[in-house]
Image (tube, rainbow, N blue to C red; front, side):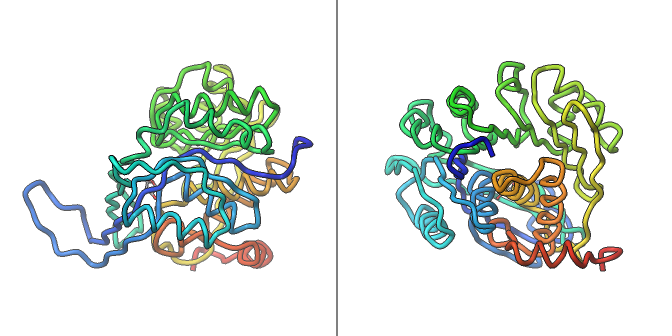
Length: 315
Ligand code: RIB
């Protein structure tokens, strides 16, 4: 922690996730009979808020919603999880949605997200919640809102001495000024590839990419590597954190969000960043054994049980 009251402020989007399981994605012009469907809460920022809150963090969430059934899904979710909603409702817009294809064999996913009202989150919206950001110990955001809003949030937080975390997802180019506002940058392999122009597949690749991002101004870089764990690079050490197995992989959607939320919670609780990375890997390992995004986030008890008794070989 940084001497501030323990509170995680998150800027991002909420959308309704419509997840379709199938043996393969449909081809253009084809109708495919699927194997399963689930409609539930999603959006990277909201998922991260749920992950942190479920572990016991005090969390507020800055965003925009429509005034419709999906907005009520969001409000009910945040009420149930104890998340403070700092949200504008726009009745001229709509709450967004995501199409999620889930490969029935591997649990891997492909997503189209339409942020709806949250695509209008503005710098003014962020300014409106300046006091809340400045009073937080951690500020975290992603790239699903307009980048101008993310930049404003990171700048407010940085100037107030609040620890900043950027999860640069979905993948998009980011300038050095933005990177320099990040105490922690948490991309996955494909986001790290896009940010650096390098192929990032192995932990070694990730180490090289992290160094390049740090040369451009980022603080500690943690590159998540899916089934290969994560690469932690703080400028002094580069450590490959091995993957954790928690059982059969059902759906990988939201695993990165789980990682970010759990990492932020652990950091806020005073855990050293490398250990917080290990903790986040364990949390994400549990989330992929369950369907859905927000609903798949684990509790502290579940993570503690896994860490004291890891599953070998994923079975
Ligand atoms: O990271 C997973 C999330 O990305 C999904 O919940 C979907 O809504 C998209 O925003």
